[in-house]
Image (cartoon, rainbow, N blue to C red; front, side):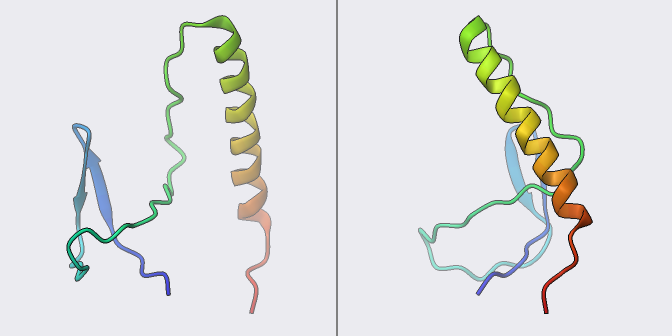
Length: 72
């Protein structure tokens, strides 16, 4: 069952803002909930074109998902 945790990203590290009782070595999946995401810097033109396209799709998906009615 998903359990939300509050974290802050600071200097390349995620810092927990809420208590977390996980066993050592437990894997977690991180979902970023922010409108201030910055795309990575890519110098290869081909890779950059693909990254820009994927970034646009991700932004459109986020915008559309905010307009959906919650289930249940």
